[in-house]
Image (cartoon, rainbow, N blue to C red; front, side, top):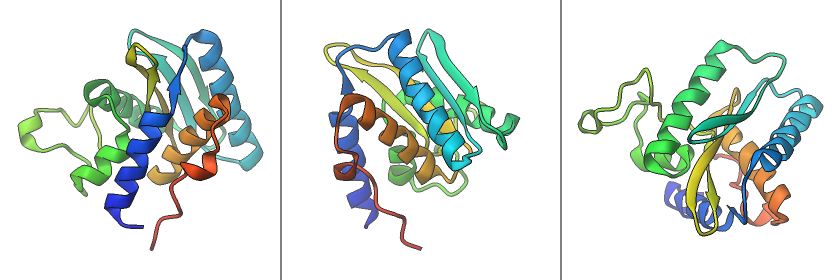
Length: 167
């Protein structure tokens, strides 16, 4: 699949995966589902779910480390600034150094171009938070989040899932 096709599909994910409401209970349900998947599949990830004013769910799985938490923090900052998926930005920006262009004036200590941060969008309110996963290759981090949101919202993930990356 071409990069343009991936970007179009991610835009469709962002437009489709809109919550009717989002609160502590929803964050816990989705976070727990991601944690359960990670346990079942031995995924060495962290999951961090938050609104822009406070954390709502956090879990670190066996094999994850402090670096994963820091990558997630920087992904969260990117979603907060751009209100879109971090993997979409990776594909749009095409910057192998994982930094934003100098003109963006974003400190690399606080912002990173890496997939795995997905906006929490609420109908009638817009983007109010983020679900971040870190520890796998970025396309897979992104996919874990999309799968969990699809399952929660009752959306057929097979219609929104990115295909395996061409090597």
